[in-house]
Length: 259
Image 1 (cartoon, rainbow, N blue to C red):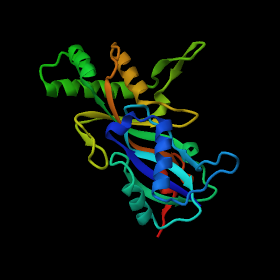
Image 2: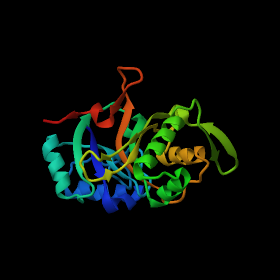
Image 3: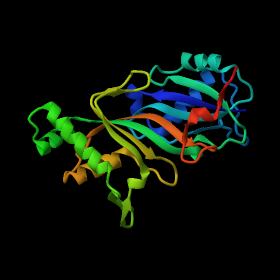
Image 4: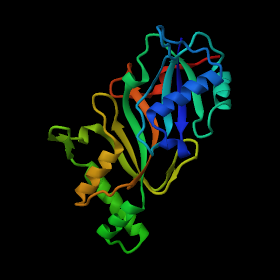
């Protein structure tokens, strides 16, 4: 039986890399006594796969791991068991069965929602650029320029590889972009005032990081985005709805609660 687990990654856990996160979940599965399936061979390991890994320093309400289990209790009890042995900053939000022939989370991913706030280094540069008389005027100017930026037919950036540089148009990969006066994570752990909401293409074929979008915005203004400019929180991960062209489904909605 295949199960998809949704979890948060908050606080200090945002600095945990992908390999450490995998080891962490292996321990959680053992401590919660999950009847997880192991691979065969000389060095058996738990069968689990994660959706798109987060960059270091990014928090999230929408991380996913798929596991194979031999037996299981219902979704409520399994969520309680996992949370009982897990860190408060990695909170298990859902535990759902998915079809046996379902693609992995990593294969399904098509889009992500992010909330992006400007840290002090970025705010200083933007305020010097706009020279606004007060906070309200400043944010009105930022909002106007964000709308102009998003309204462009193409947004060209230079992508660097090990061997060369090439120009790429990222505009088709930005599905939504808007200024918001305030936003918070689904569970109120992270609050942003004010911020930018982004929905971008995600996956193995067309993957657009929010940092790259904001870097392009700074370039549009004739500025260079400084280091440590952004606070980023992932709100949701989506796959393409198999029943409706152009629509997205949350990854957890490909499964169902176990009763």
